[in-house]
Length: 312
Image (cartoon, rainbow, N blue to C red; front, side, top):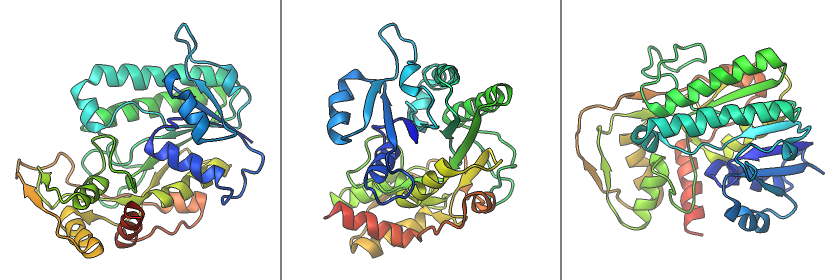
């Protein structure tokens, strides 16, 4: 198998590559692992971190997406995305230019390279907008309220149209709120990792839209299990939610963190109106039918695992 990955330096990219190279996941024996990075300065770091992987810059010296590193790949796993919701909102033009237009350049190059399957990590937390029913199914109206979700959806649509016309196979994964970083958040995203990092350094956290906000929290190891199954998937589905089907409010999360850590989380509630999306919980029925019955750990189990790792 030849597997090409964008976003190797990101949270999910790192977790996925580590799991592939651990030898604990079946199906990757003898796999050719190709990593694409935007920053040539990161190549020595990635080569050292992932021995045996091939590492290339995404673009050549004149700015074109490179075709040869992707040549005849079985799967291109597109995890690279330059923004999170907060940064996308600050500069929507940059978000669209870098991620949607840049994603289309990647897709064109993948077609020229004869990549067999394109797997895109979208966003189940933002592409649906305000839910008309919970849990949210894949056929729910797509009405994103944030720039980040609009860009993710725009690339979803372009990917589907391109693959329908070219015959390239594709799969879109729409995850809920994935957590599990043990080094603290590197980007302004992820309430669980922010809060646990704050507890560890005895720092307060600010809440701007109250504690009634509900999210579908997915532990990173469960997300990895879904991604590995997606790589091996050969069915007809093209869009799958990745969620537990259970919602957790911020108030519940606060209680669970105190229980798991033995420390009280200091919350400063700014009470600045309501969140654009108060509740987001994803139906996973289609995913289970397509990929099999994934066991999603409870939030308490996931928090305990992350806390142990952070303090190991």
